[in-house]
Image (tube, rainbow, N blue to C red; front, side, top):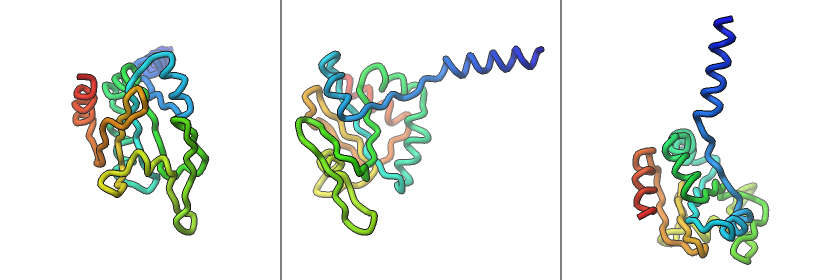
Length: 154
């Protein structure tokens, strides 16, 4: 009986105490902006990028980061190698193959190119009009990311 009570207690605590990071598609953002204007943070990554995977496992699992992103921003988790067409800002972005099963989505290039190159991971911040206001290309720890979010809200 004690084990059952402990199990139920743990289940309730873990189910309600830890929120999930809400991630939206580019298509969803346009209608969300009509309801409530927010800055958009686009996390541009690939499956093969070790720093990208580390940010997903640490930074975007940090409860303070998750809460701040969910309450103050629209977050888009965007794989740069996405093969489907993406409609954003009244424009269609397509996958551009560059070799045998290798390529990049044009939208990743549009949002993630800094100094004529794209280096993953990239954080791209858009204002409420979908204009790029900040780009950063590097791993950010949870503490550095929290500081970054505070600065964005100032």
